[in-house]
Amino acid sequence: MFNNQIISIEVSEESNFSFSRKITVDEMTEFLKVLSSSYKTAQHLSTTLDSELEVNIDSCLRALLVNTSQTVSKSNEVEPSFINDLNSYNYFSAYAFNHDELEIVSINYNSPLKIEITGKSLRNLVIAIALMGGEMSTGDFSVKMPGIADMIQKLSTTYIEIKKFSNDQSVIDKEIGKHVGTLPHTDINSFNALKNGVQKT
Image (cartoon, rainbow, N blue to C red; front, side):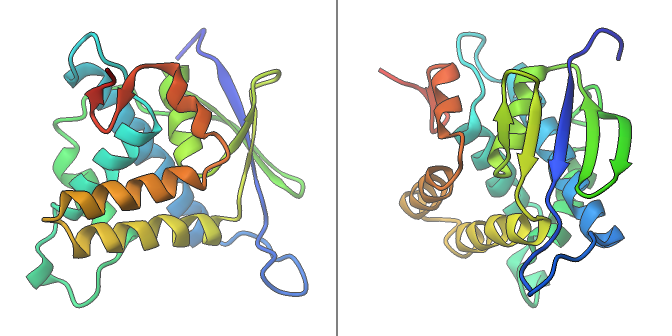
């Protein structure tokens, strides 16, 4: 992936206790899985939506959570799990999402953890980071992420509500809107004219 923009992501250590603790391997795996899935979803939408429309946080988050919820039958689950269902989503979409993968350029764990990542589409990478709650500085393309546990919990809460009311579009719209409203970069939606999967009028 030569000549692609490199984004430096700073991942916060967990600080829910009286002290900060290191990021576990499982947490790092979940973080990269969600980032990769979000980016692939944005890339897929970029090639399947009407050419006059673009991708934003709202449409990408909607596709990621709604499509993931549809890959696993409710009757097959004891309790909905965003991360477990995401595995199924990635498996079933592997052939449909034929796009360039994100690549790790470097990892530096000198507290905090810093990862340099590159991808074919800078815009879609920014959207993927933003829907996970990352705060990006456009000056040097650096990103500050929230704690992984907090980020996963936030997405999981929205996901469970969407899965619970999968046949109620008004509830899905409400939950997606609520989630997007808590993100630091909701203004990324102004990149284009797409809202809730349709063009604004």
